[in-house]
Amino acid sequence: MKFLFDIGRYFIMLGNMFARPENAKMYLKETFRQTYQIGIGSLLIIAIVSTFVGAVTAVQFSYQLLDIGLIPMWWMGIIVRDSLILEMAPTISALLLAGKVGSNIASELGSMRVTEQIDALEIMGVNTTAYLVAPKVVGAIIIIPFLIIMAMFLGILGGWVAGTMGGFYSSDEYIRGLQDGTEVYYVVVMLIKAVVFAFIITTIACYEGFYVKGGALEIGNASTRAVVNSSIVVIIANFLIAFLLL
Image (cartoon, rainbow, N blue to C red; front, side):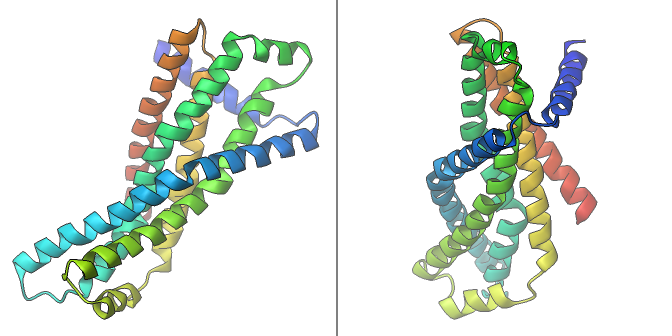
């Protein structure tokens, strides 16, 4: 029953989120702040992880192709490119952001709830769901696709550096693979994943933080639930998008 209660309250929160803002300028300013905070705060971790994911993908697939033999190594450009676009860049970035951004959002809203700041805003007549949740969701939907595009390019760069330095293939072979049969549709699927994942991560984190009851221990539990639940839903959504669109 609690699961059904949470599902119902989650969708009610989403419905309230789309209410007409009392002060559009205030909401717009908060949206810009959230976009900047999510984007700048996540740049470094996304850059480091995506570069090494591309490098590991290149090295592991190169070993496998060399074991098979008689397969041109310029295929590595295709393999690394398509792996990053369709799976690695959007999914791994989303799981990282679920841990970093999701836990931050749940902690922030949870702290505001237990210190009665949200109650104070409600007494002043502010639609707290719209003011506190909507800017975070919109900001994430704006900036996370750019983070995932950056992850794709850095992963491809990591694959080039690891493969050429390891002597698995030449730079010309890798670039030839990157240029072979580029599918724009794959990029469209990646961007659809980015928007869906951004919505999932932020709305689940906001839900967990917004309805916290208790003290510091409950805030910690809410942050953990936000990371775990959003990661599970991201993985399920990833499968459904791949199943339906590919």
